[in-house]
Image 1 (cartoon, rainbow, N blue to C red):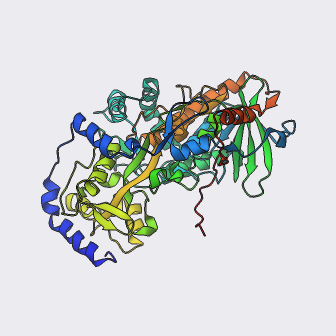
Image 2: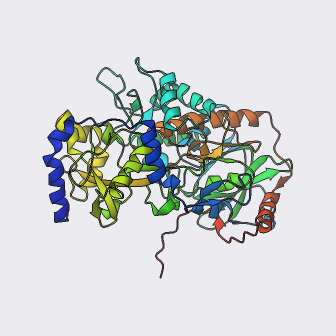
Image 3: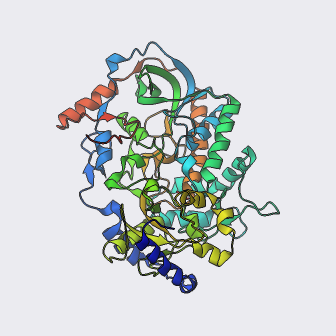
Length: 533
Ligand code: MEZ
C-alpha cells in the first residue's frame, strides 16, 4: 500500500486497465519520431547544461558543466610535494579501480605473468558493476549471432560507435560468458543447463544472461574472489590523484592518496590501466542516480590531464526507470528486466503510452514528455513519475514469477510496504551511465603511451547510447583485453626511469592562459552531500 491515499486511488486505475493493457502492443517508433522526441526531451539536447572546454586535448568540445569544472579544475598536488625518487609500490601493471573492469584486467594481467596491483579508493567491488541488475548480453543461442548483436548495438548507439570496438564487444561476448561461468558465476539456467536469456530494450534476440536481478553483484562477487585467490595485491581506500609520466611522456605510474590519512604515495609501473568507472554522482542536470557512491568521473580527469582524449563525453544515459517513490530509494535502479518480463509503462490515466522495450534514450525521453508536455505524469514528493505496471508480470506469466526472476526488486520495494506483485510502482529517469569516456583503440590503449582504459571510463564502444546488458559485457571484454595488452606491453619494457609530474604545471599554465581560474580540486574522489548551513 502507498502511504498517500491519492496514489492508491491512481494505482487502482492501473489495475482496472491491466487486462486491456496486457493485450496492447504499442507500435515501435519510426526513426523520425525517435529523432524529434530525443531532440525535444532527452537531457543530452538541453541547452545551457554544457560547457565548451577551453583547455586540453578536447578544447572546443562541449561536456556537461559539472564535468568541465573537474576537467579544468586544480590538481590536488603540486610536483614539488612529491619525491618521485622514493617509490612506495613498484609493479609491472598498475590497475586503478576495483570494479568489474579493474578486476578483469588484473586477473588477465596476472594470468599473463605480469606483476599486477590494484589500487581502489574504496574497497574492491565497491563499484557500479556490483549494482548492475538485469543482465549481460551475448549472442550464444542458435537463432542469434555476433553479427545480429552488432547491428542491435551499433544501431542503438545511433551508428556512432567505433566499429572495431563494437566488433570486439560482440565477438568476444560468448567467450566472456563461458569465462564467467567457469570462474563460478551462477547464471540462471534451465533444468538441462541451458542459460535462460531474455530481451532488453533494442535487442532483436533474447540474449540477456542473468543471475536473477543481481547479475552485477554475482559477477563482482566471483571476480573479487578470483583476484583475492590469486593473491593480487589490492591497495584499498587509496585513490590515484595524478598519473605519473616518464621523460618521454609515457605513463609510468600514479601518485596515490590514502583516503584516511591523506598520505601521498608513489606507485611506479610499466603500464597503467584506468578502470575507475562512471560519473553518476556528479548528478548532471540535477538528476538522481543509480550509481555507486564512488562514481565521480576521476578517471576522466586523470587521463585528460596527461593528454588522453575524450570521446562522446557529452552523452549520458538516463535509465528510464529509476525509483520515483518512496523518497528513500529515489533514483535507485529498477531494472529493465522488469519490462523484459512484461511490465508496461502507464500514465496517470491508466494508459500504456509507449512500447516498453524501445532503446533507453528513447524510453527516457518518452517518459519525460509524458510528464511534461503531455501533463500525464503522477505527482510525487520528488516531482513527476509514471507507473510501471509490475503486477502485469504475474498476470502474464503466473504467480511466483516476480519472486523467482526479480527478487531484489521485490525486496527493495517490500521494505517500504509496496508489494510489486500486487501494486504498480512509480518510476522516472535516473542518471545511470556515461556513454562516452577516454577514447580507446581495440587494444584499450589511449593516446598516451602505456596508458590503457577499460570499463565505463572508456568511450567509443557504445556510440551515443548503450543497450541494456552491454555494459557488464564491456566491463568483462575490455577489462580482460586491457589486462592482456597492458601485461604484454610491460613484458618487453625496462622499469621506467626519470619519472615526472611536469604535466600538472603545463596544464595549469594552459588554464591560466585561457583565463580559467578554477579552484575546484580534482579528481573529485567522493561526492559532496553535506547540507548547506
Ligand atoms: O546494462 C545495464 O545498465 C543494466 C543491465 C541495467 C538494468 O536495467 O538492469
